[in-house]
Amino acid sequence: MATKIIYFTVNGRPEQAEFNFDCPSQDVKDLFRAAAEAGPHDILKLYNTKGNIINISPQLEPNSPHACYKLEVVATDCKREPLGAELAVALGFDLSSMEKRLQSLEKKILIEAGETPSIVYEMKDQVELFREKLESVEHLSWLGLFKELSEGKCKPSPFYHKRALRKTREECEHVREKFVQMSSLEVTEEVRQYLKTPTFDNWQWEDTEIMVLLQVMYTDLDFMPAFNIEVEVLQQFLYEVYRRYNNIPFHNFKHCFCVTQMMYGLIWLTDLRSKFDSVDLLIMLTSAVCHDLDHTGYNNAYQINARTELALRYNDISPLENHHCAVAFEILEKKESNIFRNLTTEQYKRIREGMIKCILATDMTRHNDILNKFKCILPSFDFSNKDHKDVLMMIMIKVSDISNEARPMDVAEPWLDCLLQEFFNQSDMEKLEGLPVTPFMDRDKVTKPSSQTGFIRFVLFPLFMELANLFPCLEQHIIDPVRKALDYYTDMERALDEKKLNRAQSENVARSKETTQDTRESPPPNQNNSSSSQPIRTSRNPAEP
Image (cartoon, rainbow, N blue to C red; front, side, top):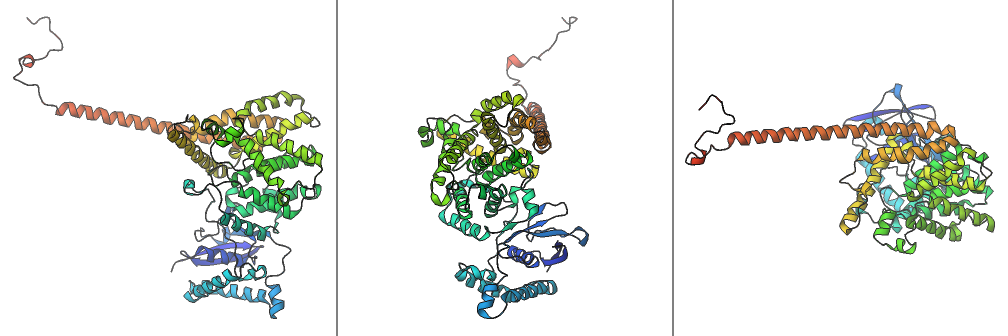
């Protein structure tokens, strides 16, 4: 049976893994987890020679010892006891040592035999049954409670219409359990620094891992001691936020993370910590987290035209954004998830006011008003002026909200696919319900590049460049990537236009040939018809009688 060999390093130590091409995915992951001597809930990432994260799966590209991958445990529970330590005391022998021996034996079998004997799979099945009975017992995690890393890039399914809009209770509880198990993980410094950059790739992280990273943001900005936020309350808040983002193609929990991560990165890149106080920073980060809560995938125009309950409730004034705010403060009204519960009344009032301003600012119908206001104050911008700071905070969340094109193309382009899917879903519904069809969402009129070139030119650039005028350091981080994105989609649009032109020309040539062929094959005039018995002359020679 054909096998592949993967060369990699872990903690600077060279290793190699050999497994069959059709080896089960979980076996490959277990093999790498054993090589890293990682715990069952630690987060592992594999990097290629370019430093990009690649998936640990049977589809890994074989490499050479000179082009080693790098395996890292990027988040680990530094507080946990050595694996199996609790049972070791109870049972009188070292389970940790036994586990390592078993892992070593399995690895040896794979290398020497070229395949895993069927008895090993039978034993794994028996262990799995045993694990299901005991998985709620935390100290038995050594039995095999391995974290499931997703296959491929975690792009949202193209079949969202087949999923329930709301997350099921079982789905949420499963994520909650994993998050609790992983919440004490200590993220590496390398990942912490990566998290502060616009190049961060969200597609390589699961929802539970994303929740850990959101917790890191609150911790690294020193919000926990500054506002006396208990870890358990923050975790419950993040879980409630996750629960209230819906199963839709674009405005989902991963979008929430991307916006928050960009806001977090901008705070560090612009050194805003030295210009704003902690309350303002808390407003900005938490507004980003909550800015699209319970979005259903249909924009304000649809809400108003369809006279939905939200449009009626908010009198057609930013129905979605008002709803996002309301849901956020529903979560914050619960004591167990209120990260502001230890603040003074004045602090809470200021945060509530700031969050409402920020979240309402994400309504694109207010885009020009907010941008023009920022332009007016920019020449004399004063960080000590509350009104100036309020406008900047609104600009920051707007930039974060539509910042996908500031990311690397392999991160940004899948997001555009998701957005177009959501747009097309809405226009399809508008057609079915006889409502006005939103032009930029109509699948019959919009192409992928045409949807972006105008948006970049007339929305992104004017907004991003004004922010970069205040913070010149952002030029390389958000302006340059957007320029590249515009070039990319302009070239794509030109190629599509040329393709259409060539197709039209080909069709015209084909029609011309068909017409000529039909003329040649048409029957001669009826000879018995006197009106057509004489030859038809197209011109007359004057010399003729």
